[in-house]
Image (tube, rainbow, N blue to C red; front, side):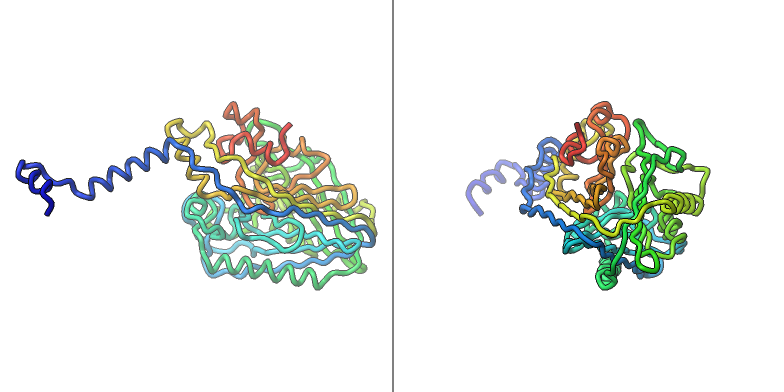
Length: 405
């Protein structure tokens, strides 16, 4: 025992316990976490790529059912949820489109979002149909899981990846001569409805890759949140109901859906059938293009620092932003696929309708190649309006993604 300790005891002063120092250190860390921004994380640089080819078209498509255990983990709402029963099967789908040696991929999964680490080879985008009653547990993050992505489930994640891998292989094997049909309209009488301030994007786009004897695949881009199915049952929601109306694989891509909900007077099945009927109506008079240019370009996007919205109490905004900084990757990927004069712009998030209108003539594809949350206009974010309460990266995200003027 050291002399100093003896003298303190002799004077009746108690020794300080190590637990006191630990508690003080923890309190200091908590104060700092709530007051000091975390250092910006540097991501490994991603190489941008662009491929282009022109000539006769070839296409191949496949859809593979995702094999899940009983009562799978669900994604779409906060908390822990498991399905009580299965309403509709869920699928992974893949579509390869080639011209002049250049291949672009369009792939989709019946799930809420595309988490980090889930991707496809080559150039293209992997998009979520955004069903809020689909398989979750794909994002290895406690915070993301509890917030809505579903508690991480390793086996369920493997099942989704296996179905996607099989779909990609089958689509590649099925490549054959094809023609492309493109049709679109401003579908103001459609079932999509605004749920907050600002306009919705009512654009409706449908593509069909037609083979020699039958359709290879149909692609629909339309902005409408798939939240019509029960919360405790596995369902592909209205995209699944629409897919059931087609013999070929149907790829439902979400447009600028950030502030777009659905007509509450319609059921899940009615919504899907209405969308499918509109697509078939437009395709009936669409011309066929046997040859055109196919281009795919991807670029890395440095995300802004996470920023809590004005809906978070001021005292907790820094802590909230720091938590987001831990959970999200510092970079995202933006993808453009051009088929002749049409360009699809894949965005890793949920942009609101006004941003979709600003992006025209490009057509937005939400929830593609990752997830960075909602994307609101700078004007509404600064007022706390629209979908700003759901954003994670503040008003700078739209600018980083090239959607802000």
